[in-house]
Image (cartoon, rainbow, N blue to C red; front, side, top):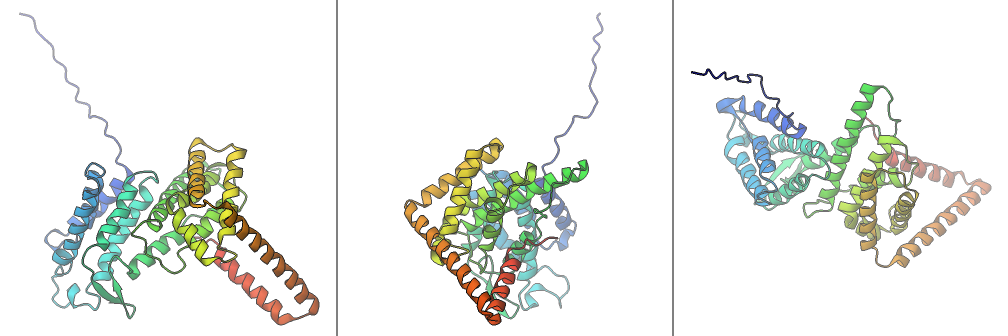
Length: 359
């Protein structure tokens, strides 16, 4: 009788590395579940389920997630504390600030980690839209009344703080291998987050916070009105600017048209248009950057059917600038120090507004 030798491979199979966005959610879920019966919330697992079922379930996934998040606050978080003197419903803001802070922190981390062209970025934006369709609830914070998921103070604080915490994109790309690796990763994450802000600004979920247009004003200017550095840094700046114009071009254009100011008007829109055309004509960019620039230009063209309107605005701004220069010279010659001080003060304000904050 023949003996058949059977061998088995007992070596463990290599597992695929967990994607950063999934690892981040798993970490928060583990922390939340570690409280056992005292677990206060489960928004991280709700977000994970939503992202895993999108796009197969379409925006039904975001609708289900919004309903579960609404229930998470009322059924789990609000009555969560075992301390009868420290229950969220006893607080002036009914615990909304702390709940929203945790939820938005987890939510916005996904905006950093999901790649800018991942359709799940749209999923995040649509979740905000569905949350805004829930019955409105108000809470008090900083002596004012806010509506959760609409004009709440926490969203404004966190989105602004994370934008302010951007990397020092005005510094040269490092040459040391480990530092260069970290720099490239940070560039990619900054493109991701900027793209999310652009998608949000151009969506139905957008809440017009005062000064919010400074995000594209500064970041598009950095790419299209300043010298473009070589390497990853230049690619990063151009991708950020392109995504702002692709996803929030209409929002930017209409705000410029309404404002009509020298620093934020159609003349600047026209300069951005010509800058993109010049970069595309010069060539030398990666296929990825070239494709996004072309898509941005297509968006600009679709929003500007009357090119003469932009041209006239540009001419008016140039004339205004010329007049201001002439007036400045006359002031200097006449020795009117008061007006000179006002010009100096205005210049200082502009520099503060334009300066990119660093960590």
